[in-house]
Image (cartoon, rainbow, N blue to C red; front, side):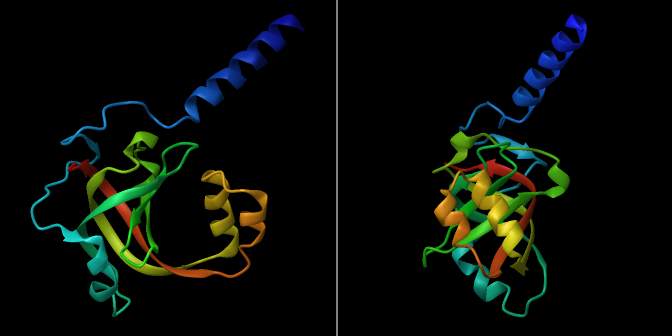
Length: 157
């Protein structure tokens, strides 16, 4: 029984360590995922105009990170002038970013599109962001939002 408990405790410890966002440098030039060439990036504020036909587009987008998933670093949000957010997920969960990315200017290479996010998914992301129970319970409607699926992210400043 004692070896089982030791193995169980070890497994729990490993899963807690693996569920953390990565640590690492958050300095200009640091790349997460695929290499990103900064030239030709469009500002996040231009996305509503670029996506007005509701067609997905491959783009390089520059913006300021406002939120990072506290659990794994598996998503980020970019700031928009109207205080809305551009939600960014990592393609196929292929890479994660450190929470210290918050406040940094980045360029993201990926697919941009407008989607309708379900209530369940919105609540899941609110839980990841450690929102209060009241804030989570207040989510009752799906939300149309701009979504980026990132192949790579590079810190600009």
